[in-house]
Amino acid sequence: MTLCYSDQSFLKNLRAGQLSELFSLIPDIQFFMKDKEGRFVLVDQGFIEMLGTKDGNEVLGKTDFDFFPETIATCFVEDDKLVMESQKPLPNRMELVPNNELQLDWCLANKIPLFGLNGEVVGIAGISRKMAASDIQVSTDSNLNTVVEYIRMNFAKQINVEQLAEIAGLTVRTLNRRFTKAFDTSPLRYIKTVRLNSACYALTNTSRTISEIAFDCGFCDQSYMTKEFSARLGVTPREYRLKYSKKA
View 1 (cartoon, one colour):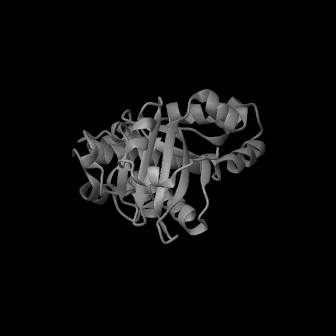
View 2 (cartoon, helix red, strand yellow):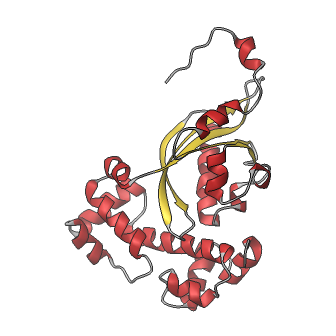
View 3 (cartoon, helix red, strand yellow):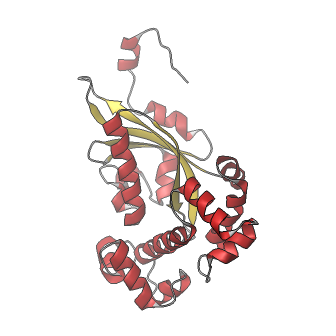
C-alpha cells in the first residue's frame, strides 16, 4: 500500500506517537520502533502487553535481549540488521515468540527501515501479529501445519521424525525436505529449538529448579539440557538464569 499526502508540513507538525495509537486499535497487532542500536524508542500498548510489562517505561531504551531468550532475540536482531543494511522492507516474516504458558507461538512480522533527514538509516519500525492455525496453514504446506502444532503441544514428550512423518502422512525424506524448505531448519532441530527457547523462558520467568525445567521442556535430564545450552548458547542453564533472570 502506498500512502499519498498533499502537505508535508502538516505531517512534520503532528504530535509524535499518534500512529502507534492507531495500531493499538487493530486487534492482535503489536507496533514497535527501534533505533540503530536495537533499542526500543516507540511501542504501542499491544507490544507492552505482549512483553508482559506494565507500561512503556519498562520497555523504552531496552533491547530484545532484555525480554526474549537469547536464541530468539538473536534472530530478531539479525532481521533488523538485514532491513537496515538492505534499506528494504522485510515482509511477512514468520517468527517464534514465547507466550506466558511457556509455549512458542508463530507470529507474522513486517519490518521497514527508518531514514533520517540526511537520508541515512536510523532504525527500523515493525508490526507483529500472532498467527492463527489457519494462517499457518495458508502460509506453509498444510501437512506441515499439523506437524508444527503437534510439536508445539507435545515438545515435552519424546518425539522422533518417524512419528512426525506418520502424522503428516509423508515419508521421512519428504517431511525433512518440505520442513526444511518452509522453515529453514530440520524437524529435529526445530524440536530442539522449541525446547531450548521454552527452557530459556522458564529459567528467566519462573523459580522452578533447573532439573524440573529440563524435564518439563523435554530434555531427558539436566545434564543433557546443560550440554545443549553450552553448545547453542555458550553458557550453562545456571549462568543463563543468573544473567537474564526476572523472577527467579
